Image (cartoon, rainbow, N blue to C red; front, side, top):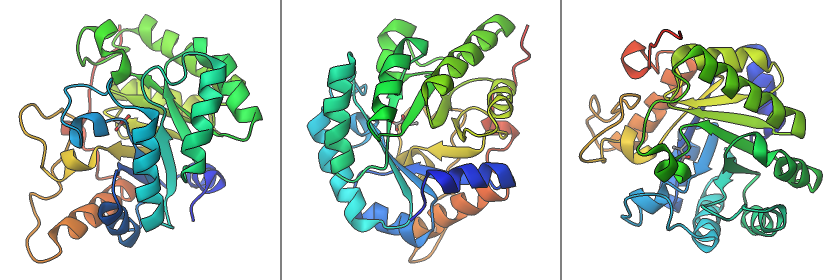
Length: 270
Ligand code: KIV
């Protein structure tokens, strides 16, 4: 089973690692067969599984249920699970809720935010809970952002993001996840922290790992599809098309053919 030391080693060796969201056993088994390196039980399940228009209605109970389903069926990937909206508004709640998700089978929890969560990160880490910090576009704050928009588009905003990352890494954050930032920002963050694996979604080709929402990369998402998504089903045919698409994604990440330029935000920072 892949663990945090493996992700750190991958980064040192320059070996990219794959990550996909996953919420159920059959998909978790397919990801095990495809040797996906890391799985995220994302609170995106509020949209992909539950049909809400944001991640806000997701509960800790939902996260525990889906983490249990995934863990039973996958003994290969490092498993991360989100703490949902308002489940870590204070350190006490964060510890109580992270305990539930870890006991359901997660090896790491992911929370969204910046430097103001340093104390929470420190407390979780001291209690044996590795933390992945999600920065950039953080969907639980969609109402503060006023929509799903690319973040850190100026030099000043990129420097502020780097500073937030520094505080969180100093507090003990084990992994960083960047969503929807210019490719240059993804590279700068990955380069700034040699011992901290950085996962990107819409953060360019130079982060250490890549993550996509599995429904997006299987072409199941209707309506608006984000620029950073590639439909890995589009070239598949045959009886194992889904498994083949997931395997193709894994190899594309490792061989650095995904993300291509078309899936990255090439924005000059001014
Ligand atoms: O919940 C989720 O699926 C996520 C990914 C978009 C990174 O946070």
